[in-house]
Image (cartoon, rainbow, N blue to C red):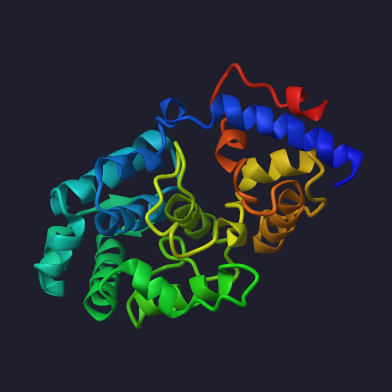
Length: 263
């Protein structure tokens, strides 16, 4: 780590220590995971919350809570107790921007099939995981294909690294499940290393990464996400997404100015 990287790490560590707290999460779809103590329910909730995490946050929360409200205190149990036709009927009329009722039903049916086959989404993901892989992207691709099957499930709801998507929502889901601290509730942290996570990149995080010199790429795509993660991995090899939540508070918290990070 060179002198410039050490200085950036010190600033990011300070930012993390100040802002990586549960009290600063709301409003964020992540907050919906906190209501579920059972990791096997939480992983289902995480798929719903991350899949719908686009658009205005207020509407995201309304849409996520509408779906979760249908499933009651145990989303996993609700899915396993119902046939695909029952799930489709329950979602009739649901809309969240580009996501239609048939899309959300397809996601939930795909999750149900994975639960029936593997017992949990964690086990489904691990079925495609090779410890020799440098990142979780190959396992994520296998997982997405498993959930999708031949169903009408658009990429904005379930992304696959093999496509053109930046996989922001999928990488966000993995951060929630693989990291375990005051903000990220975990559930898969005992089976997968946070060192292999990829930064969830969108236009906001891309701008921050450009300002910090973490990338020079002009597109907020998966290649950029990998490049930013590699740079952050030099600062924190065991947990390159450690700073993600705190960095995304810029633009949300009015008292934060990016200039304080630029030195």
